[in-house]
Image 1 (cartoon, rainbow, N blue to C red):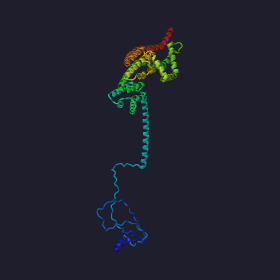
Image 2 (cartoon, rainbow, N blue to C red; image 1 turned 30 degrees about the vertical axis):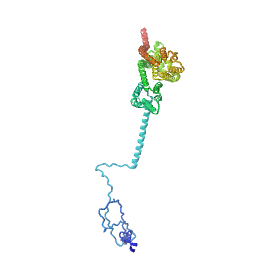
Image 3 (cartoon, rainbow, N blue to C red; image 1 turned 135 degrees about the horizontal axis):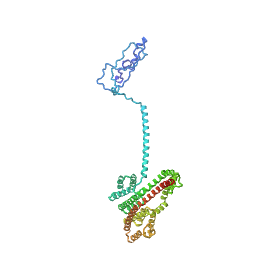
Length: 497
């Protein structure tokens, strides 16, 4: 029991044993007596040994003693052979792929160089991307400007209303119809307008309100007609009538352009030819004739015109630009617009054609709105916007205001026969008395439409002799101005002989 209470260690003096910690201190140094310096202990390089489970246990007869440094202070009696350590498995270094024979070695860049290159590449790429982004932004701004400055042709509006009327007539909601129209149109500006209209309608705006918010595309007359269709519940019928109006306007515009194209081209060509003669031909003739005292009158006029053009050309250009700018500014003003509209109506040929165009549109829209159930006063106000002429617009608005006071339309419009012919006033009076104003106005519109076609056809036939007369007059003047001095010089030469 006492042995169990005080157990004695199996090795009470570990320093005296070969494997103890103090075994090297008790070994005598053989080199101390001879004076030979003791060899230094070779440090054992520790290598990473992988944990490999041995296949067989080590023999007990060969103890493993770790190599310890030999102390130089303790004397050693006799040399002792170093303990034999069993061979330990040494871990092989990590296998690297052997380079192929004859293959060039790829130099590996340093980390600092790689970092600097990477930073430079990133900065250069960022700068290049920024320049490309700026260029894209500039081109995008130019594209946006061109789209905003671009216009929408009358034929494109006509196609828009045709498709919109067809889709609404087929039962499609307005938003779905606009979505389909976005993909149909090829005009970028009209596409943006349709997208904006769809967005406004989705937020609760009416079709007429969305069109009014794009007043640079849709005029007040069109918005008023669409609004009347929405209020009366006959939007499809209103849009079809609006399409008919646009078709008529497009047809008249094409006819007028076809009539006016020929004289405009001839006049522009004559002006350019006159300028070329005054700048390049007349100075040579003046040098040839040696002065303008004894020259014929046409030649003197031509020479004086050439001197004015060559001496004061900058004043002429500045005056032309200033005059056109002042005219456009005056025409856009409220007072100038009314005055210009009144002047245009007094033109000999074009005034009559313009008056009949306005009466045709006003009569047709006014009669159609009444047949659609729109009140007469409201229909008259909408028809005033259709006129697109301040003189007619003021007169029709005054008639609508007087109608609320009990004054009939025919009585109000009868005081100016130049704007509203007596035949139209009498037809309106009959329509008011018989409650068939819508039918009467439709017949009046048909009559003025036929009259307008006859006027345009007659104008085209009349313009041809007028233009030929202008061309002949200019040619005769040029011939006289150039050849009269030559004939006069010939007479002097013949008389001298």
